[in-house]
Length: 266
Image (cartoon, rainbow, N blue to C red):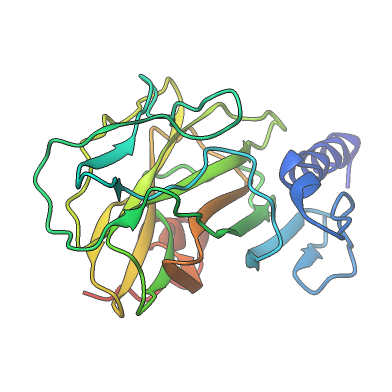
């Protein structure tokens, strides 16, 4: 392996394995990748490949936007999180979300109470493939995860929030990423939220409606993708309302990167 490839490999590994997200994980030191791990391999030229790895992390302390459902106050008025122009929840100095009255229609019958406390959980996705010595360029379905709605889930709107997205290209440059929150709406209509569109790569989660006991799919879609050879990101969800049981590559990612496509349930 020549000097250039060694440099690219080193930079990309450093980029993906030392994310701030790991600092939020209790009792784990993920700052160094173990090259003896079965998910990590190299070809005859020393090009690194890391299998698509999807990892639940129930111990993570999510430090991004709090996941709070739509709720009803003592007067029966419905409130939702107030968002800024980027779709990010506005918070008070102590971190509590600022709320505003919800005036849209709704199917909900038992919204969470005002003092509802979410159980923040996360899922991590990681992949790296330098073997083609080129970027993977595609838009469309990226990753798909299965989520089972809890039988006792409160009616309301539950955000699916991507955080610490890290994508890099073959030139070992980190790509700017714009994210869009998705929502799981349990017996409730989807909030009217403007989609963020950045200058480069955009990753968005879909919004789905469901009832307690349903299984839904969280679909992450890429737009305006200039090409990458690896990524590492996490998304948060409310563990009180759902359980994310696993997932895999979406059809567009799988066809471009020669991965097995995750089964999509209609």
